[in-house]
Image (cartoon, rainbow, N blue to C red; front, side, top):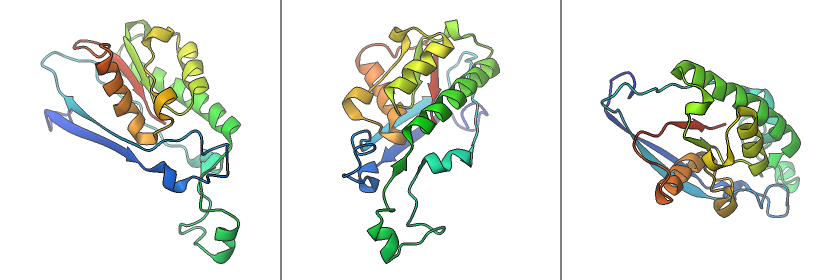
Length: 187
């Protein structure tokens, strides 16, 4: 919308209440996620900014991170409730492999579309899924640790709120300044 000239300013909101979907007896998920909300205002600058994106969708990974029951595919029943199928289920190893492969590819695609090299990026603002994923992606991209913005240690994985919350943290610590080039990635 901004790059097409349809609007000069756009408000982007991300909000999650993941705690409602967590099984508090499943230590593989309950300690990783946090509730959160964040917002960012995107403003088209006067200069020719490098704005590009790489958008994709791959439902093949659905078995690795999902809530098996409660929807149209498997409506709620006495059995699905008894079997605790109304909570988030995750295969962390497979999510890690999927994220590493797709996030690196997507970042390269966005950089290519923007006509930028990784060395021109001032801050890397990734979705806060897992610190190992973030560090591994940054390493494969060739980004130094000082360019990575994280809130995961304080807030957990706040899902779609994680990038706006990272932007707020970068602004608070003085790293989000006019003219800086950011690479944002959500997955």
